[in-house]
Image 1 (cartoon, rainbow, N blue to C red):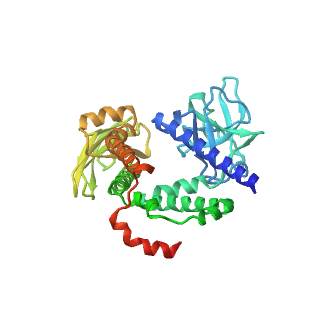
Image 2: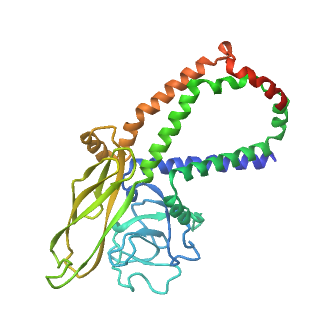
Image 3: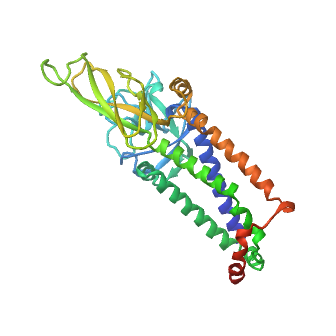
Length: 370
């Protein structure tokens, strides 16, 4: 039993440390493509049975790649924004020939030019030539994006409760000793302290607002068709056109919205919107149509922040990293929680414990429980 307990703890803390490392890299690197290590998943059957659809893997960056490596790259011709396939050959120019394990033809036979090194984002981390698989990571990622902050908190509570139950199972002897002890008013009095109540309110409020801010971050798409003849509602090759779009603040809290064009041939004015409660705000998107005919989709990154700092400061902080404004905005609240926690602990040191009068009537009830 002890061996099982040790293994479970090692796996648990190993997972926590790994996720912490990935989160740190995700925070430091604004673009996940530049992170030294990150989590990715495949969304097609092209790599089965090596990597099943929606299974995840660990992607690491490298300066060079060799035949047999499973790489994730940005294609020039293929429709998908990212493709994860295996290198099956390297040309004399150092370009890569790739193919999905479940595909009959190579990507190059399908029209994709041989890959250059700057197209490759990274390779799958492998042990004995087998990638480390994270089953269902894709489905989990898709579902997490659809969940609201209250559902996420509920999931965290369930996970914590599950860990508590497992701890009860593996620590029966310690639990028997604990059950022999009686609950005293002195033991629960600190949790009825107004300072503790204020700490709980601040923690919950900060968590909800931070979570809701991050959850509202999204991508918005603009689609159009490039045609060959003028006079139609759609643009011709090389034509610059504009579209007016609108965002609504359905909440009761004013906030800023930062608009970030994902594509280089698109500009947005204004880039930062002041969103007043229960109002719609317009912004203008200017796009230069590509030279080739066809259907195109451009994406706009949308990130919201509570209106607790100036717009100029928000713009400066955002240029460093999208998470930096959140840190600055909520830093006072976090520091206040820390200060209140220190005050609360000192108020209830062993030498200073006092039973509050309002808890005395609970004595009879507690005696019945114990």
